[in-house]
Image 1 (cartoon, rainbow, N blue to C red):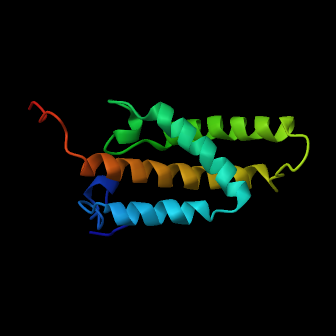
Image 2: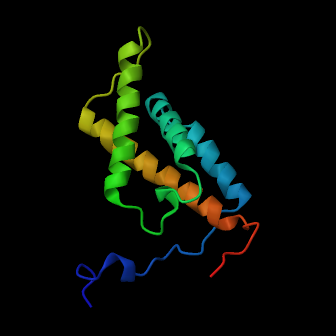
Length: 131
């Protein structure tokens, strides 16, 4: 079967079942502290939005989150970042291009969602699912 024509849900996923240890989580947090200032400001907005989206039944924890919902969340973050950029008087970060900013937001959003999904999978649930 040709990989390009194979449906996404049948593709082999090499990272399924891999969970990060607390040491690896600490490493990720430390690496995040080294982000440039422009990225750390965006990351703060991404984390704030992910905190709002983190509830039972959220699309963040769907088996396959849809691209349209991710873009909608990314556009909301983009609007917030642009608002901050307009209200800032001095020592402001000016982003070079709107499309560049949207791409960076999308990358940071997907990365944060994957991290939170991994953390949720590795935590034991208080009650087993009823099926």
